[in-house]
Image 1 (cartoon, rainbow, N blue to C red):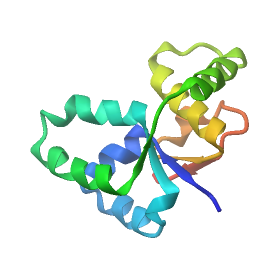
Image 2: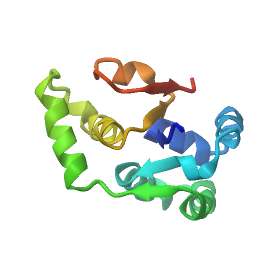
Image 3: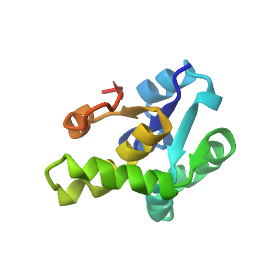
Length: 127
């Protein structure tokens, strides 16, 4: 059974109440959907600026797994970078992609083009 790791683009759309993303997420079983702690930290960093976001954060916290970026994820990130051209502005995206690879999860994103250069990554585009 496929498990899904949501990237920041999908997570912010979800928390913002974007209907297309909500509909697609509703078709998945929540126990098969997770967030990276990296994405979670991005969400928390901006949540104080957006009341709607704050309201929806608790729903995510209660219903989705938040995966730690642990040693195995860090090692997968290091290995991933060995074969890629450096792109400083995509550091967090690449860390999340490495975590998806390491956990065997498909990465769900609204911006699949950001991840197209990553070999072996299963990308699910929700754009």
